[in-house]
Amino acid sequence: MRKKVLLMGKSGGGKTSMRSIIFANYSAKDTRRLGATMDVEQSYVRFLGNLILNLWDCGGQEAFMECYFATQKDNIFKNVEVLIYVFDVQSSELDKDLHYYQSCLESILQHSCNAKIFCLIHKMDLIPDEMRSTVFTQREKILNDISKPLQCSCFRTSIWDETLYKAWSQIVYQLVPNVKGLEKTLENFAGIIDADEILLFEKATFLVISHCTRKEHHDTRRFEKISDIIKQFKLSCSKLAAAFQSMEVRNSTFACFIELCTPNTYVMVVISDPTISSEVTLMNIRNARKVFEKLEREGARS
Image (cartoon, rainbow, N blue to C red):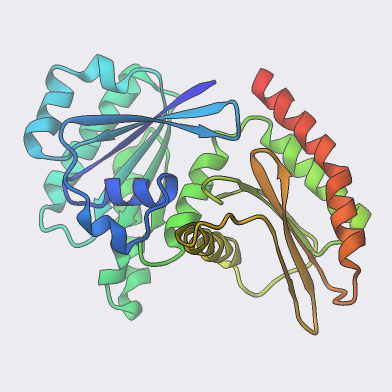
């Protein structure tokens, strides 16, 4: 099952850097050596086993952008599942950026009218903390207005913090087959083992693809923080020629287990009882694997 994802925006806006961090295990510092994308770079990323993301990273130089709309429109904008448009928050040419974005929307309406639209307001780390919410809200309003009749979802992002994982988790969530079945199964599993929270991560990217929360938590950004922390830990392991397999964390208030769930996913289980037996929890996870593997197979066939 292949799904086409367009990654577009101005040259130097950070498209290739974010793609490399999410899908190619680059650290933020490693992206400094990446060059500009010339024309269109296609890559195929296997995601959740049978789902293949066909990523089209489109160079944002002005000559290329004009060419996309003049001579390559049918090729680029046909059969698109998701358009991700990246805006450099410090761009000095906002009007031109919006013009090209509108041209993309017109082409999407013509060739892939059911595509989902995501706008990433990128490099937010360069904006002072006290101004970020205001700047983002202003840009979001502008983008929502000019996107009509299409709807766009906007995210503030930076390669230097967990906001990148939040945005991309929301994007891939829209592409995961049978995601409602996953959510229902997580709810049932959490009830059976009396877990406060269960998260399901895609194995390669560690993006959150589904979750169940039964106990409120004050940190609304915890999912993307965990993705970022574990991804960085995995990178550290690989540098030592070691492979990440599992993790257990305990303190006086909870116990947390991260284990392989299916060949394509990891599961994180959080339980309030810090005295819970590791053996019991790991046995419950092993017993649940067959259910989740069956859901994956059903999603692959749908």
